[in-house]
Image 1 (tube, one colour):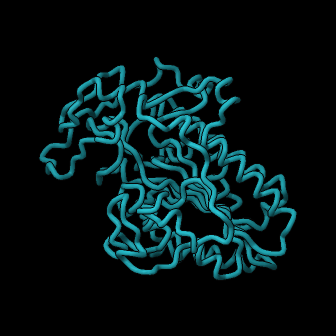
Image 2: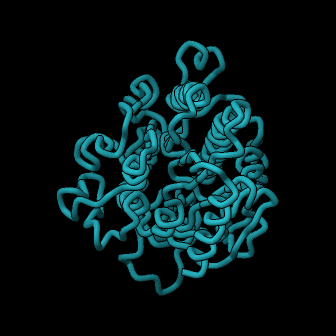
Image 3: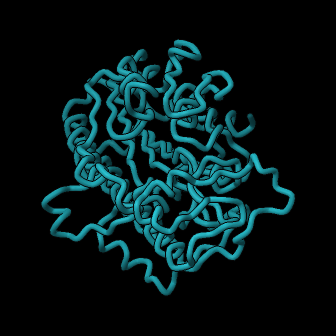
Amino acid sequence: MKLLLLFCSLLGLAEAHQNKRMNVLFLAADDLRPQLGYYQQSRDFPTPVHPPMHSPSLDSLAKRSFVSMRSYVQQAVCSPSRTSLLTGRRPDTTHVYDLETYWRKVGGNYTTIPQYFKQQGYRSIGMGKIFHPGPLASGNDDPISWTEPYYHAETKKYWGKRHNSWYAVPDAERQAHPLPDDQIAERAIQWIRKLANDQTQPFFLAVGFHKPHLPFIFPEKYMDLYPYADVKIPDNGYAPRNMPEIAWSSYGELRSYDDIKKLHASGAINSSLPSDIVRELRRGYYSAVSYVDHLLGTVVDELMNQGLGNNTIISFWGDHGWQLGEHGEWCKHTNFELATHAPMMVSIPGVTDGGMATEQLTEFVDLFPTLV
């Protein structure tokens, strides 16, 4: 609560600093644990990083933001976490615990963050993965929340079948068939240019990137940042002593990919994947993070280039963390630190320009009241 009050005080100062209501650029990434360069200064990050993460865009944004070093999601699963953050209510109120339940049907007709801004006269625009997509989890991206038709990138080319858990896309293939997150970044840039040309109405622009979610698909060049020899396996390969069995997840999401299936991994407690596979998966995840970091940078840079930086709040968050073989565990779906701890930062022009950070605990439900 102290952190929330401080956030609100900062935003109150920002509001006074401006002659008109500020825009909001609402950025999100999927399955992003706080393994970013900026977060390595935190004493609470539980695992050493080998090699150092290459995340210059988010590190730069963090240096001019209010950053929560210890922000935690309400549940480490995509739809429950996103529903909670976007409605400002915990899962025991939304009644969303899976990927197939729409809160307006089982919890209540709760107002969402983009819907609230829309009600306040903002132009509310969404693209990519903000709500968990599809008819079951969000009624196809909760249409009532937006003033403009929602945008999704074409994904079948790269994500149509679960053959490989990771894939480095050659440059020529990417040129011929842009990756889904490439398409989302380009659409965001187009909207920023359009909004810069018509500033009669404040905007809430939500841009949700899919990576580094499985499969780890990214441009080939990002592997150069993480040489195979530099990528280490975790040094804590076993489950905690006396851990209750219910705390474990058998990481079925990862085991559903054909290249992992052929290993006949059980996902059982204190079982493991081969060391070379662990290193390849970690390298793929790191590369996907750096790819998304670059795309986020292109969107923020365009906002600045169009002269919107001085009157736009930039909010960034990851929907939950991700486990990369620590304790032999993978994916999310647990209450382990690496699954529930995710990055969150808010950049407020004229207030957080010099950068601010806190080690106080923050819940993801704090973001809704903070922004509004």
